[in-house]
Image (cartoon, rainbow, N blue to C red; front, top):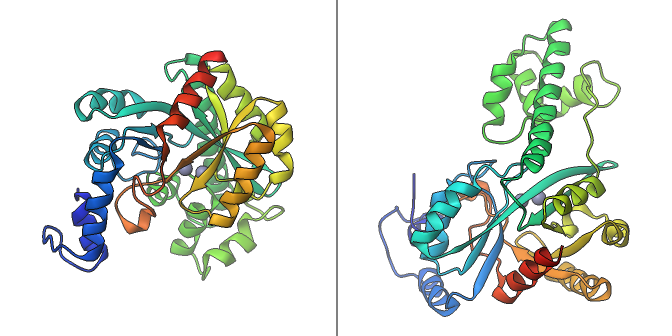
Amino acid sequence: MRHSRLEFISVVAGFRPGVRRMTGTTRWVTDRCKSMERSRADLHIHTTASDGALSPTQVVEEAANIGLAAIAISDHDTVDGIDEAMAAAGVGNVEVIPAVEINTDLGPSEVHILGYFVDWRSERLRGHLLELRRARLERGKKMVGKLQTLGVPVTFERVLEIAGRGSVGRPHVAQAIVEVSSVQSIGEAFARFLVRGAPAYVERTKLTPFEAVAIVVASGGVACLAHPGKSGRDHIIPMLVKSGLRAIEVYHSDQYPESSQRYHAVARKLGLIETGGSDAHGFDPDYGTSIGSTTVDMRVVEDLRRAAAVG
Ligand SMILES: [Zn+2]
Ligand SMILES: [Zn+2]
């Protein structure tokens, strides 16, 4: 269901959609929207092209509704939502920044690299991203094959259903195992079948953050370290800078103010552009924060544009 932002807040507040009572919260949002004066940008938004709940058009409409000047469409490992968002942008008068968020692995943790102003039409970029998505599907298929050999009757179709719009991973396979076997929990499914060394484990094709930075740079984009507080891999930041990183996501909806202060200092020290965004996946509270909940000044967009132009 599509809600306007005010309706959505009413839902969160326990009111029925469409019943627009002016609560303190709704008044605050209305005032905040007016005061934005189209000078703010949300540089981290997902759409249905990856695991978001809103189509690219709906995302642009929402950005226009709340008065944003620019948004970055930054789906996981795909640029497929950008053309639609660009087409909608003219109507809403919102600038759409072509972007991508590439998921990479470093040891046991994931590191996400954002790419801004990438050449989203580039066959090379699309080829890289397609390969990443294909590798994830292949891994899921192989795990299902191993489980079937072990007598666990999971199907790949069911795993895909569970994954929905998200990219297939071990948690989805684990849930499928719980559904069709005597295994009681996701944790047990992991322990018995899916951890490294267990009988249905399949090694994943790993992409390093350095490789992701190289992919972004090769497609004319500005590479940015996403939500560094979440990945907790600060020691690699100087090395990433050496390999072409030009920006860091200092402001993120899931990052404490103290972390933002820390990464603000890191950015100053290393000469990085300080970006920020909501990482919104839609309106539904299950999808986390909403569009525009974390924004940066349009000057940041100009800095990124300049950096992309210089190459
Ligand atoms: Zn991320
Ligand atoms: Zn994200």
